Amino acid sequence: MNPFSHVFYTLIAALCRSIPLNPFKIIQITGSSYFRAMLLQNSINTDFQHTLASDIQINGVGIHSGATVEMTLKPAEPNTGIVFQRVDLPNQPVVKADVDNVVETTRSTTIEANGARVSTIEHLMAALVGCGVDNAVVQLNAPEVPILDGSSAPFVEAIASTGIQQQDAAKVWYTLQHNISFVDEGKKVEMVALPYHEYRINTLIDFNSPVLGTQHAAINSISQFAEEVAPCRTFCFFHELEYLLDNNLIKGGDLNNAIVVVDRPVSETQVQRIAQIFEKDNVKVNEGGILNNLDLRFPNEPARHKLLDVIGDLALVGFPFKAHIIANRPGHASNVAFARKIKEHIKKYKNKKDIPVYDPAKPPVMDVHAIEKKLPHRYPFLLVDKIIELTEKYVIAVKNVTYNEPFFQGHFPGNCVMPGVLQVEALAQTGGLLTIPDDPENDYDTYFLKIDNCKFKQKVVPGDTLVLKMELMNPVRRGICEMKGTIFVGDKLVAEADMVAQIVKKPKVKV
View 1 (tube, helix red, strand yellow):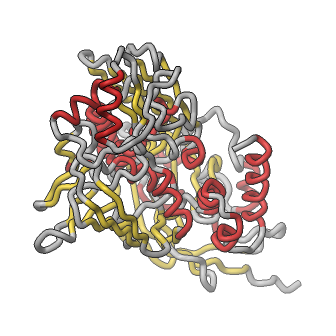
View 2 (tube, rainbow, N blue to C red; view 1 turned 180 degrees about the horizontal axis):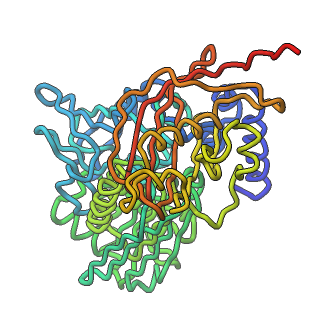
């Protein structure tokens, strides 16, 4: 795509996001597979889960098995994930696309469970991730996903043409608490995942090949997948191709679905043998050391395909996550081993995901003076020092507990403990800052109606900094607020409660 077209399509996609049109109707007019995919990526709300808008039928041949494959991608319910179903086997068993189900990584990624095995899933998995599909059932009548042209582009185009459907379920993104690394000294593989606010990937390949040399590929966001990565095809070396053919390992292989790199001297007889096997005419080695059956789509297409494989294999982590991935000499075995480490990390910290992070260096959303303008409370009963985050659905506040608190004089002198009822009151005041309407006359009060499931997990003592979170459980109706409250000191939950209050307008005072 030339630079002018790229700018043009980007502008049109931005326009489509700002007007009330169905972008998939516009897709039918443009006819550009890149444009379709770009519209798809720019039209989804990543805060929600998505599935396919309708069934997608894709037929092809498995590269290793040579079997003809009829594959149907079907919409699935929220929280299903990606599930493969072997409809050709008794009882049509399913196997979830998860790293725990990986059983083979030789030249492709294979999963197995419940008596069902499916191989070469990585290109399809990468396409689903790149298009933002969270839930789908992949039905196959054979043990292998079709290879098609050896890239993810046909899958991306099919998904983009059909469209995806936003579901009424939140998409929970996970982030990393620290660097995660994987090293395989024998294969000279190094991989690291760094905490990052996007899904960014860098890959580096070096096969000691005079043809490929050292290649690098990168994307700064998964939104670049359709244009920059999806079209990149798998590759192999000529000497590997001969070995695979001699051992009957690529029964469905074709010179049209792989880049063949010739980095060692070969004879004309060897080249013609390959041409006859694949029924191709005029096959020869071009000046760049690539069989002339295909033209490279990018100068670094092999490195970009390795990046594609990384995306597809890391999709098996099973949790949507954001990180900066750096992969040096990646392969399916290392990708899967790395995915296992990332999954272990997420499982370890997933229960701590909702813990608010307090950075005292950042300016508050509301300081104590702004709080006083909204809450009627004053010393010694104002128990919120500042608001650090405020949205339509939740509020996060901070209360610094010091030895100078007046209640410590009479509450366990010599063993100072903040009374639990005051912790609940601090939560209530925090919730009021979310739910009380903005009114310059400060014309509203709030009153408790109910407190349920109140638990105190840890003592609160002088020196603790309370981080209080109040989250609306339902929209406010007729002044009734239902909220979930939690209090943390660091990463420890010290108190929680379900609270119901009513916002009441103050009666007018007759003069």
